[in-house]
Image 1 (tube, rainbow, N blue to C red):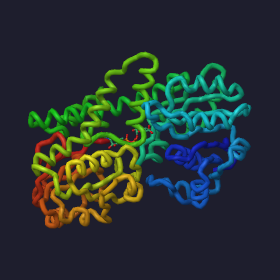
Image 2 (cartoon, rainbow, N blue to C red):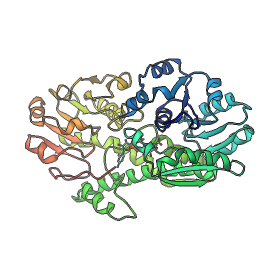
Image 3 (cartoon, rainbow, N blue to C red):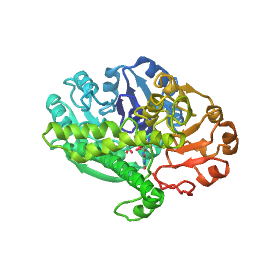
Image 4 (cartoon, helix red, strand yellow):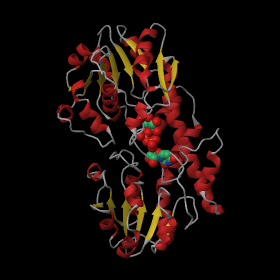
Length: 436
Ligand code: UGA
């Protein structure tokens, strides 16, 4: 690999920013990544990662020579023409996307000429047009990111599609971004900025809709004695539907779906359009997190004074991200019913500290299960599939398990002495995972 490849600048070194920086460095580009937090920049400069993401630490270390972290915007501007904006856009109190960090970057860039601002942060449609008006000296390209936490490096390196939105006058900037992604393959979608912005929001909202849909199907399956895994398998074989994102469970979480569904709903509302479907998607998801409590009540009568273990806390496996994790709502609801809650997560325990008031954190799954009246599997970590469930049953006061992700082999649990209940499936029914 040579140093003659186009330098890349990355602004905001969160999940998306760090993966973008590391992956472009891996592709041979010199990368300068800028964050406003000095302690984060110092840690990354020492090769220490601030997030848990499989394969990322190796990538950062392997490409250390090509990867520079800084707090200085000037250093970035001097080093690269192509600037990826990867700052976060969390929800505001009103449910709209908070663009203050994007605005801060725009203010800093000011009248800088000659650079290309490439927006990776998820922003409401219309944002690009406003920024372009405010920064006439810059070219503007919308290039939304579709990576998933836990498989972020793999997703970045092997995209299904690369979306590049550029308006009239910025075609050359769009070509430069397309050239960066060319080695990765994937369908290239060249479009205008507003459409690119909408592709991102619509994709996340559609995936969230799929999950809420299958969760409602699961709830009906419970009523009619069907198995949602079988239903999802049968549905997914129709190529128009596809098998992905049809895993029923205790609701979606994370830093993206909850915020982006709400942001799209608000974006529509702000223009005077009432996006009815998304209200249902959000409500189903909220109720789904709480259904486990009903299941426990049906088995235990009351939860007052009962000890309940949560297996897994992160919003999904292979990440330590606790943002909008279903475990947060579940723990609070269980405590509200008078239960004592103990939890174990192989990776997210540190991130969860301080978020789970009054929840005891255990350093092993068997330790968490000791003396409990019930357990709920919240996050499908591989470690739980391999647990010695016979030993687990013997340690619990009552071996009752609600499998919130339909992850475990129910036959194995029943033979180990468990009362087992999943989501949308009859107890004791074997289950094959559908792909995510
Ligand atoms: C999501 C999208 O999948 C990415 O394409 C997108 O780039 C990203 O948001 C973003 O906008 O940055 P992510 O939040 O990392 O990625 O995780 P997902 O794998 O999508 O899972 C989200 C939630 O849905 C998790 O809580 C997961 O457990 C849940 N889920 C997922 C289900 O309940 N059922 C499924 O079938 C799939």
